[in-house]
Image (tube, rainbow, N blue to C red):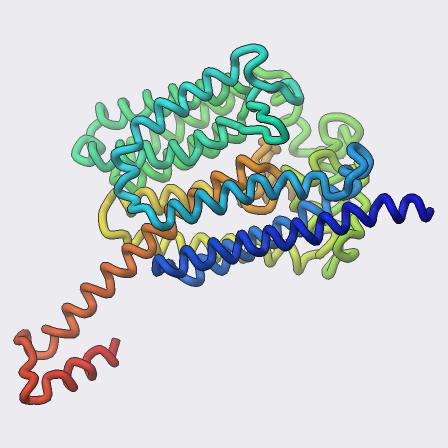
Amino acid sequence: MAARAGTLQAPLSNLRSATGVARRALASADRAVAGAGVDGWLLVIIVGLVAFGLVMVYSASDALGYLWFGNPAYFFEHQLFGLGLGVAGMALAVRTDYHRLHRLAKPLAVVTGALLLAVLVPHLGAQHYGAQRWFQLGPLSVQPSAIAVVVAVVFFSRWLTDRSAMLRTAGGVRDYLVVLAVLLALVLAERDLGSSVVIAAVAFVLLALGGARKRHLLLLVVILAVGALLMVALVAYRADRLAHFFNPFSDAQGTGYQNVQALYGLGSGGFTGVGLGNSVQKYEWLPEAHTDFIFAIIGEELGLIGTVSVVLAFLFLAWRGIRASLRAPDNFGALLAGGITAWICIEAFVNVGAVTGIVPTTGIPLPFISYGGTSLATSLIGVGILCNISAQGRRQASVRRAHVDRWGRDWRPPDPGAGGGAGTAGARSRW
């Protein structure tokens, strides 16, 4: 027993040290975005989700880390690599004018397409669980399909901005669908249905925001639905998963096992949960407990209070993202902010739906919370772009407001000698 206590003491010490590193990294990002004039509420919710995610990754994976690697903090420490990259990328994105992405959209799309092809090359891409969709770089694994999601948002936002006049025509929508189909084919070649679903959904949202006709949107829904059914019907394990989705308990030891265990975890948590770190499902009862199904561990350990809090946090994030999109200085910024918000919120609510049995399991992580360095890093970079759009919109609104304050009283410049300065101050106070 003493030996086991000694074995656990070192990892716990490393965990405290790693937590300090994470805290300093988040504080650095906080200062960077605060200096850029970013929406403070948006920053608060992101920092809160990331910090909560780190705690839950450690709580959900400590048993697995000790059983597999003799280190309870193994997955937590690896998550810190993704956090470090994400914080650096987020700080850079916050301080970089998002208009530069308009010029970089095509080069980024080409590089991402090359990565999606390269990962399929034998001995170059790493294979896990029968899917070849990772690059193994020392202790880190990079998933190009996760990068493709944020690049798709940037590229399609530029596409729709440059071709806004063509969106009302069938030809313009057809060209958009051709580009989307090529991207989806590359992602599906890696057997990544989850990223394909997110890209298709975000592409639809962007097309709607771009001003496409309703009949064209309806046609796109039909095409995507037929494509989704074909993807399921042509792959045996997806067909089995869909068949048991409606009643996972009919094959509780087979295809429905993961869903059943997730429901057991959620149900056993009750209203307040069994306590942080006290999950039973994480002891290899629930597969992927620290990744795609971490929401079930949240429900088990923190109960209904914890799960509802997470859902409310993402709803709050959606509100701030929509607000940033509505206040964006231009059409490109509005589409980019709307696309980023849709991407993160679609991932969040599809993940929650899969864990709770509302939608079929697709392998989509819970943003900022699930284990996965590439997902965490790309999500933080996406939020950094959103913060920059929000900051520019806020600054432009301030300029417009100052202009109204100056000229709004009688449409003439105030006369300083006649108390115009005080009048202007009074006008500003009304805002």
